[in-house]
Amino acid sequence: MKAMVELGILLLVTSACLAQTAGGTAEIRSLRVTRRAGKVRIEVGLTARVSPAVTVATSPDRLVVDLPNTTASARQRRIAVNRNGVKRIRVGLNSTSPLVTRMVVDLDAAHAYELATAGNGLILTVST
Image (cartoon, rainbow, N blue to C red):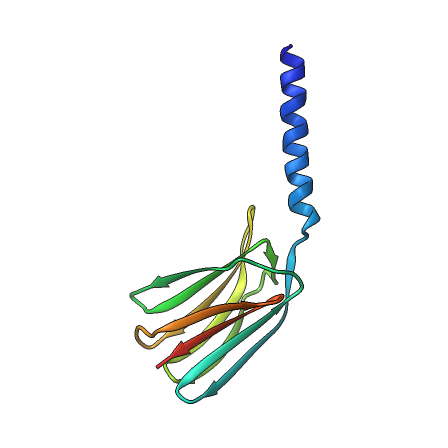
């Protein structure tokens, strides 16, 4: 009986892992920053849909966007913006287990923002 329970648990864990893998991991294909009308728009193109999570951090002010099940280079990528309240954007692999890529938007002060997902991408708009 104990062996049957252990086998059942093993099958359940295996099927959960396969279901997670079936969706595949996403990769960042593109990162585009545009500035206009007092806003900075950050467009991230991905190979698959992602459910991002945003954390507002202070001291210093920044937006932290976690992209679960998304790969990125282990080497952090930095993009200088220096406009409309956004200093820079940093993107890199934050964790391998669980797999999480993190995008940090360094700000000069607290700013309003909007996050939208569109297909296999996301758009973060920071207002002044």
